[in-house]
Image 1 (cartoon, rainbow, N blue to C red):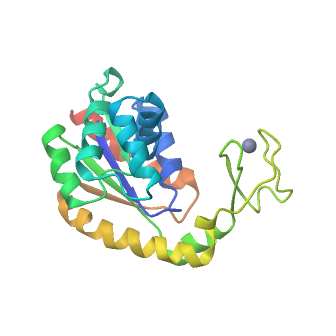
Image 2 (cartoon, protein in one colour):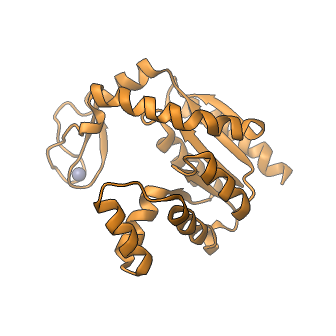
Length: 209
Ligand SMILES: [Zn+2]
């Protein structure tokens, strides 16, 4: 089962990906993680990616595609995978078609007002990366490592609106590209309420394969 997840930052896409990955036993692959792993590996490609990221530029399509391609060839992807954060552009989507046949694209849909509300209450542990909401963690201390939580610049209301604009601009051409394979789900309820229709849909998809 080869799936792509599309959804704005703060739409609950990451939580949904984890549930799918757990129940359907397929890896969740995010380009952010791949870039970090690549840099750590300190090979030729890693050095290239490191210098691009340090310059603040976006990793070019051909490099990203090369990295994704290599990842999808790993044995744990045999049963399928969930791509998160890739493809970002129609160009990348076209290149991906040549590497792998995607079964379905799940679009996690949430109104901008709710996203802004959710993200502005988000607090991050600067030490271990764990994420909390102000409501669930009013003490502002990480439950895993006891560090003091911070609000990332990315999660401040003024930057959220900008991130949402960028997301919409990039994603609408992708939604068109995948229109025939698109499964749309609203994430306005709880994470479990978001997951249930997706799970039912994927079980059908799995049965067909
Ligand atoms: Zn922590």
